[in-house]
Image (tube, rainbow, N blue to C red; front, side, top):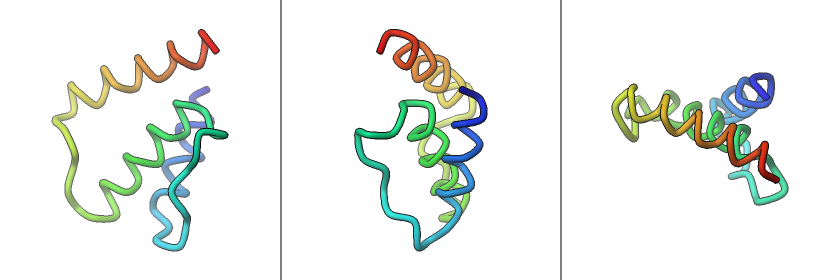
Length: 64
């Protein structure tokens, strides 16, 4: 799963990458959003919240 976060992150850094759809894992989408945050230079939440969101994404992937 950590690999999917990283893959999503790098895709999010690419301004030409389309927004991921529901066919991607929660962890991928979380990483993508983090990449977009860095691309735009504006985090969507404080780091502690993003860490909690990453944990929640991993849990959702386990449940599905």
